[in-house]
Image 1 (cartoon, rainbow, N blue to C red):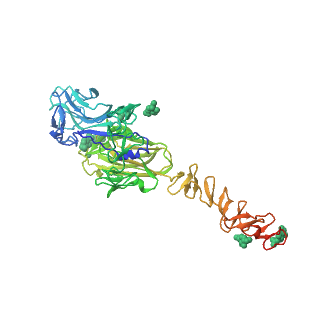
Image 2: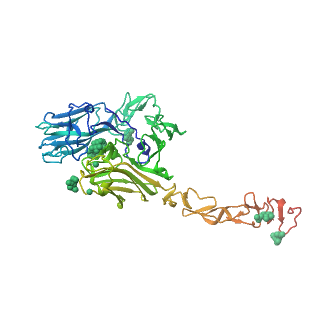
Length: 585
Ligand SMILES: *[C@@H]1O[C@H](CO)[C@@H](O)[C@H](O)[C@H]1NC(C)=O
Ligand SMILES: *[C@@H]1O[C@H](CO)[C@@H](O)[C@H](O)[C@H]1NC(C)=O
Ligand SMILES: *[C@@H]1O[C@H](CO)[C@@H](O)[C@H](O)[C@H]1NC(C)=O
Ligand SMILES: *[C@@H]1O[C@H](CO)[C@@H](O)[C@H](O)[C@H]1NC(C)=O
Ligand SMILES: *[C@@H]1O[C@H](CO)[C@@H](O)[C@H](O)[C@H]1NC(C)=O
Ligand SMILES: *[C@@H]1O[C@H](CO)[C@@H](O)[C@H](O)[C@H]1NC(C)=O
Ligand SMILES: [Ca+2]
Ligand SMILES: [Ca+2]
C-alpha cells in the first residue's frame, strides 16, 4: 500500500489568497490500471481471477486486454480490507465495473464497510460489445464513484453478487480502482473535518479542548504525533502548536532567501514555482532550467485566483475544494487517460458536460487570463467546448478527428490528442463566472473530453487604484489620489489634490494646497507672503532667502529693511534720517 503524501505547495501558497478548504487528499491505492493486469498486482483480495476480456473491440481498456475478474457464480463475495489508513474523515472509491455477457438481471452490489451504495444490473442484450465483438450478448460498463464519511483506520471494499452461471457466460470484472482519503489536520489523531479545530482525538498525551489538540509542553504536533521539535524544513506555526513546511525545506530547496519567505534555487529534481519547489511544472508554466516559467509573473501585480488539477492523483475532494460546479458528467467526475489524471475523461466527460467556476470580491483588476489542458478523446467532428465569461459567449474551441495523434484512451477506433487552451480577456467586475460547456452531439462512448492543469490568473490594478486598464489607473480608492497614470498615497510636493486628483501648483509655489495659486511654500527666488510667492516682499518685510519667506522687519517703523531685518539693517526710518544704517531712537 502506498501513501502518496504530497504537501501540495500550490494549495498552501494559495491558501491566504482564496477561501477554499485546503484539499489534503491522499491517494491510498490505485489498482488494475494497466491494459494487461498481472497476477502480482492482485494484493490483499480474497480472489485472484484475472481474465482476458475477449477479442478486438473498440474499447481500448478491454480490447484484447484483461481485467480483475470475471467473477460469477463461484464468487458471491469479492473483498479486500485496506489497512493502516492515515487519520482521515472522508474516503472516496472510484472504480470501473464491467457487467459481462449474459448477465440476466443478476445484481452486483458495491459495498463499502458493509453498506451497499450501488447495485448494477442489466439484461443479456443490454449494453454494447465491449469484450467480444461477435458475441450474442452485450456488456455494460459502469463508473462507480462514491465518497463516504469515514474515520476508521481500516476500510472494507466488497462486491457482492448473485450470478447463477460461471464466468465464461456472465459475471463482472473491475478496472481502474482507486481509493483516496481526506486526511485530518496533522495536529489531530482523528477528526470530523480537515481543520485544526475539528479534532476528535489527539496524538500521544495531547489534550483535546473544543476540537483543538494541544501537545504537552515542550512538544509540538507534526504528522499526527507530538515531537520535541519540528523536523528540518518545518517550523512552528504562529500559534506554536504544530509544524508547517517552509519554502526552505532543504529536501527541496537548496538556496533560500534570507528571511525564509521563499526559495531561490531548488534541489535537483525540483523546480521553482512561485515561492517554492515542486516536482513537476504545470503545463501552463513550462519548465525552463530549474524553474517553471510562471505566467503570473508577466505583470507585477498578477496572481493566481485558482490553480488545480495539476497532480496525477487528484480526485473528488480536490475538484470540490476548487469550487468547480459540474453538471452532466457520466456517473463519475474523474478518471484517467493513458495514466494521465483528468477531470471528466473517457466516457465520463462529454455531451452536455459543463463546468462553472465563480469568484467573488476580486480586488480591482483589468484582465483575467485562464487556461487548461484538454484531451480530445475519440470521434470529435469539429466540436469541443464553448467558453462563457459572466454569461457572455467568448469563443468556441473545436477539434476534429483529423487532429487525433495517438491512441491514448477511450475507443480504439479514433486517435486522441491533448491541447493547451489559453485565453486572456479584459475584465473589471469584482465577480467573475467562467463556464466551459461541451458541444458534442454524440454520447459519452463516442466522443469525450477530459481536462487538467486548470488555472485562472488575475491582473490586478496597481496598489491604490479602484479601476484601471492595462496602462493606467482610472480612479483611486479612498485615501489615494490620482497622479498621472498612477494612484498615490499623497501627491508630489509641487502638487495639490482636488477631487482625488493631483494637479501642479503654480510655478511660483514650491508647495500649495487646494488650488494652484494657494502656495504653502516658495521656490528659491520667491518669498512667501499670505500664501503667495512674491518676487519682492511688501513694506515691513524683507525677502528672507534662508527660508524663502517674507520675514517681518523686526522694528515697526522700518518699512524697508535688509536681511536679516534687524534695526541695524533698516533702509527707511519713516522719513527720519538714517544714521549708520540705524533708525534714530
Ligand atoms: C471553540 O472553537 C471555535 C472554533 O472552532 C470558536 O469559534 C469558539 O469560540 C471556541 N470556543 C471556546 C469556548 O473556546
Ligand atoms: C461527497 O459527495 C457529496 C455529494 O454527493 C458532497 O456533498 C460532499 O461534499 C462530498 N464530500 C467530500 C468530502 O467530497
Ligand atoms: C483506465 O486506466 C487507463 C490507464 O491509465 C486509462 O488509459 C483509461 O482511460 C482508464 N479507463 C477509464 C474508463 O477511465
Ligand atoms: C456512435 O458511434 C457508433 C460507432 O461509430 C455509431 O454507430 C453511432 O451512430 C454513434 N452514435 C451517435 C449518437 O452518433
Ligand atoms: C531681495 O532683497 C534684496 C535686498 O532688498 C535685494 O537686493 C534682492 O534683489 C531681493 N531679491 C529678490 C529676488 O527680490
Ligand atoms: C521712506 O518712507 C516714507 C514714508 O513711510 C516714504 O514716503 C519714502 O518714499 C520712503 N523712502 C524710500 C527711499 O523708500
Ligand atoms: Ca481513442
Ligand atoms: Ca460529434
